[in-house]
Every structure is written in structure tokens, then in C-alpha cells.
Amino acid sequence: MERWQKVRERQSNAPPDDIPLILAREGHHGPVVHAANRTALMSGIRVGARVVDMRAICPELHVEYADEASDHAALDRLTLWARRWCPWTVRDGVNGLILDTTGSDHLFGGEAAMLTEMETQLSLLGLTSRLAVAPTWGAAWALARFGPVRPICEPDQIQSRLAPLPVAGLRLSDETVLLLQRLGLKTIGALMEVPRLQLTRRFVRAGLASNPLMRLDQAMGKLAEPVSSVDAKPRFVVQSRLAEPVFDPTPYLPKLCEDLCDRLRQAGMGCRRLHLAVYRTDGDVSHVDIGTSAGTHDPAHLHSLFRDEVERINPGFGFDLIALEASEVEEMQVIQNRLGGGSDDDLHLTQLIDRLSAKFGRQAVSRPVLRESHIPERAEMQAPALASAAQAASSTVKERPVRVLDHPEEIRVLYAVPEGPPTQFIWRRQTHRIARYAGPERIAPEWWKDRPGTRLRDYFKVEDHKGRRMWLYREGLHTDGRGGDPRWFVHGFFA
Image (tube, rainbow, N blue to C red):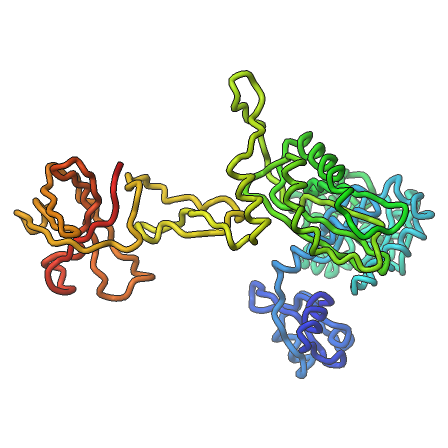
């Protein structure tokens, strides 16, 4: 909800705080409440309830739809951001994080000080948090949602701390919670007092979210539940801290490029995009970016790309920290292209493209790339040379000419059979007699792009009496009902 409100505030259309507002998502029986603001919660709105039922409680309820995919992506980013406190973090459901802070709390002055630091940093992001420390994942989950403010639970206090909490604190499904409440088991302490044999018989075939005994064992530490942390993408960044402010980063770039390329080479990676940032003494940051047409870890080449870009940096009153980061990398293998071993260090085509793009701009240098289309003139497009790898062509590989005309040129033909190849044609005032041919290859129009009435094409590979191999096509058929006689065109040339 807070993330949604921040987005609306940036768009200058956030609703007032005194209006009950909910974010809805699709449920099994219609929309259900995904999140609610403070006013809605005080009006009796419950998360997970059906929207139609909540409208009966609060007729003035304002409903918006949640963007769950963006919420998950934001929570994933927050999971990695939380590694400032410990190396093991994982997303917990749709609105929580689990951090394994074992051995990390002393770095922040103890567990209480660490919780205060976490709450402060999250509040700076505009997020409200409920925090708890416990020996197990399940106990921390329950205390954070149903316990007091920032509780710290010791290993010998788990049972006493969990006993007064509701059974919903065991991460059970709504159906299981309702069943336990009907049985009179409203708290975790009441559940602990029931003989396990009776509960085992009732929930023997239940899954994890429906088995209160397994959830209780996880919370008490009797059943292991390790934190399987997600792996962050490797970050390749080097820094240069200066003793006093300077105005030109050029003297420090060679060493930064060498250090960064050493790290890239050890990881078997190549750089596709570099980000140079200088941290000014007035608190501002100035940066420039460069790109490469292929992965590289050549420090001399990367340094040369900054030659004309450094002038764009605004040093202000000076800067005392320079950071160089490979913001986009890809796997790279060292290729031996010399008979005696090693690689060729001469100027490659990719390096020439990089230098021209850095000199004249990324849009000034382009290259042809393939795209999905069976119409020959549409199967190729021009893209910036520093763009990502060319798109894959169609899975069906066809022989195509080495040269294709941008605009097919019409010809006059003589043929013996209306649906067959021509025996002779005139192109550019010259007569060509066909000695041999292959085809036809029929290509239908792209109905999602072409206008109605567009005629199909039949392509022929022909060789004239002088040995020149050409690519001809007939547009339309006599019986297609889409115009007059078919027209013939030259479209390309074979080697």
C-alpha cells in the first residue's frame, strides 16, 4: 500500500489519507482485499476478505487494483538491499523479509540497536515495519505480526512468548485457522496443551500450511527451516578515494580500468556497459556511461572510450571519490586466434565500432540485425551497434541471396506456362535468357501487417545464359481474384 501511495504522489493524484482505500486482487470468488490504508483498517476492513463484503461494512470504500508483479519485484530488490545487516536474506510471502542475523548483531551494538537501525532505514524509504528477533523463522514471523513492539525472544523464551499469540501466527491456511477456532483452540498455548496424538490423526494427510503440528515444531525449533538466501548478481565495481578534492578524473582512469578488468578476467566475464561516477564535495554525483558492442576486459580499450566522455562530467567544487562499475556484463571466453597461442591484440572490428560510437554518438553507428519476418525486405533492420545481440532468425533456414535490393525492380517476362518460371525477361533494358531455375518458394503476406488484398509471392532462383544468378518473384496469380495479371520483380543476386 505504501509503495502504491508513493507512486501516486509522484503522479500528483494520490487520494487523501482520510478516505478508506484498499488494493484488490482476484480471488477464488471475486476480488479480495490485498492491502488497505490506515483509515480502511480502522473502519473494519480485513485483508483477505471479499470486496463485496467489505463494501457492506464501509459503503464509501475506494477500491484500486494492486500490481502484484511490481510488488514482488520491489520486495526482491528490498531483499538484496537488506543485506547491509547480514549476508542471508530471503523474501517471506508477499509482505515480509527473513534475515539470518546470527553473528551480525554485534556489528550494530546488539540486537536492540540493530532493530532500531532497521526501523530507521526502512522509514527513510517510506516503509512502515514490524520487527522481531527470535531463534526460529516461525517464531520471528509470529512475533513480528502478533507480538509487542520490536520483541527480542531468547531460545528459552519461545514457548512463553508464543503461547498468548493467536493460532494464525503459525502461518496456517485460513481454513485451518477457522477449524482450530471452532474447536476452541484460539491461541498457540491452547494448541500446545492438546495431546499430539489427537491432532496427528486429524491432520495426518494435511500439507504444511494446513498442519498445525508441523508449523508448531518449526516455530519451536524442533523441525529445521533454514534460510535459503537468493544469490545476488556479482557486482564489479572499483573505487579510488582521494586525499583531497580534484577536478579531473583522467589520471586515475587507467588504474581503475586495470583493477576492474582484473576482476572481470578472474570471473570469466566481459564488460558491455561501464558507469563512471564521481562523488562531489557538495553532495552531488556526476556520472557518464559508455557501452561496447561485445564483451571485453581490455583495460586499454575501455580507457580509450572515456577520452571524449570525461568532458561531460561536472566536477562542481571538486570530488574526492571515483567509482567505476561494470553495470552490464556477460560471460566471455578467451579465444586463441594465433597459431603460436594467445589472442590477437590488434584493433578488432568491435573495438573500432566502440570508438566510433563513443566519438560520434551511439545512434551514429548502426549494424544490420535479423528480426522475425518471412518477408525478405522486412527480415532485416538497422539497430545501434552497441545494442544487444541480434535477434534470432526464423527457425526455418532458407537460402537467401548475398545481396537483396532495398526496393524490388519490376521486369517484363516471357513464360511458357502461366504458373511456371519465365523463359526470358528484360531488366534495365537488357534481355536475359534463363538457362536453369529452382523453385518456386511461396511466401504469403503477413496479414497482421499488410493491407487487405495484398498478393502472395512465388520466388524463383534463376541463372541466365551468361551465368548470372538472380532471385525473381511473381506477385500474385491469375486466379487469385486480387487484381490483374501477375507482376514480376528482381529482388536479389546470388554469388
